[in-house]
Length: 100
Image (cartoon, rainbow, N blue to C red; front, side, top):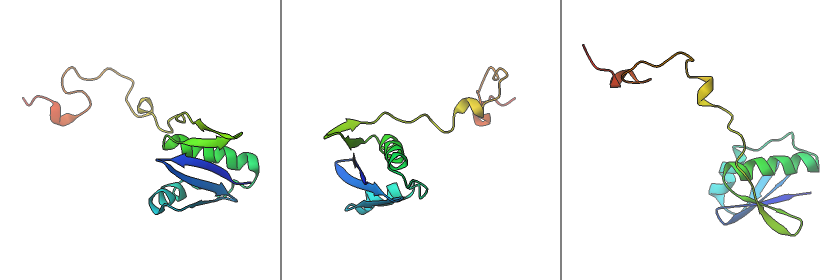
């Protein structure tokens, strides 16, 4: 069963691990996120929710459009920032530091 999403006023369908859309730009963005393992209706719906959320779109479900919330970030700054205190001047970027 195909899942329909709307992003930037264009509609796209996800079915059997592939996206179909009339707009080439949107199709290429969605193909970059396509999950070929999503074969069951539940997995297709979950993947469509993820893609619609990434681009701020809506999903057609139950006879109406539902706006999708943004998914949790995959990478966080906290994962890469050293836990110790930053230098007083310049922060993380060496080009901001005062030369002696």
